[in-house]
Image 1 (tube, each protein chain N blue to C red):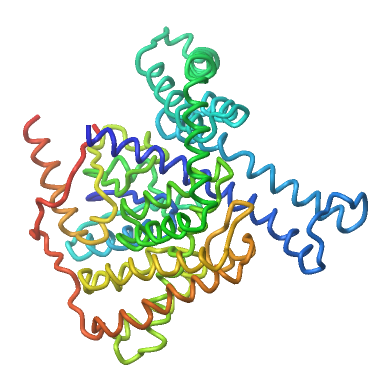
Image 2: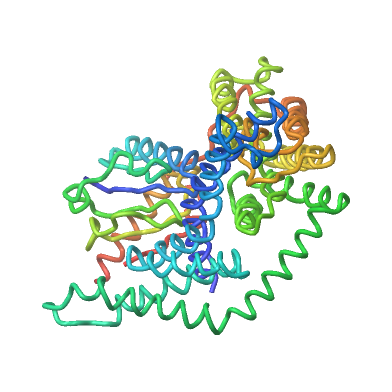
Length: 108
Length: 366
């Protein structure tokens, strides 16, 4: 798994699936293996398992909301990004996050 | 500082997102028996002590219980957003304290933040031996966080918060009962909803409307609902009236916008607006303002928390005026948008991996 992502918006109706689809499509086009979970109004959709979470290089949270079950991602670099940016420029988001994570790992 | 404000906004939004289904469930269960009664010309169920109308009254009362939970749920889930499960208990208690006193939604907000931060602080700063770990969630966190809420909110802040809340509510109530200022309010809020379709300005108007529900002030939420449902409906109408101005993909999006408008999701208008935000944003704003203002001017009012979407009219007095407002909003967009912008061949937005990466703000959590 190259990365995992979670999207969530206040109503959990429109932005959540829009951002999730945008990220999935972008990951596909970039040739990355990714799983995007939606935390919408009806609970968790496409839930990331703890194993998948731990195998990921990083986690993108497209939300300013409370995210459920964060304990799955212990030790995984986690980055919050504005959900609208995920919809508009998913590729740029993924690219920038992966570079930032790599830079941080290198600095350690 | 800006980061802190953004965090607070996130907590508040989380609280509201948990509160909304409670409000909607409660309001609809109040509205349905009321409507059935009105069809038969009954406006008051209290004289009925048995039979069908008595049961209708019982059902309506259950709905009111839901509406009465607004402060409790808001306070509890703001606390939950901040301090996880540990924050819930004190948040609920503080929220209910606010509901029982005159501190209202302000009290519920303070309760939520207070309970949440206290619970978070306890988790991070109080350490007991591993053997006694279980007393943390069972005794220490609930005791400390609830006690902090009791002392700070129940004693220290009770006077000032009650005063602020009562004055604030009186001021807004004054504004939402005089005709001139409600129409002005509708113009402003309608335009705000149309500004960024789910962005910060839109959500500010939306939050104001929702938070005031806890104060039994229903007008602002109703005003917001007109523009919220009307704007996506506008694009649905546009794709129906001017089929030849849209690409097949947009005709498809337009069809799903009927649904978006029906349930009241402004975000449905985003794909269209992105084609030419410079021209379409003003049109959205004008449409939102015109729709909300005409609903209010024609006398739509809410006596129970209003429900969004087209079917929201059943929760209102003069529901027809609400529907007229929706139609005005939808027609302004439905006609102006296709005239102003050609939706036939649109380049998808520039999304290469190197495009303006500096615009993207990252926020490391660990």
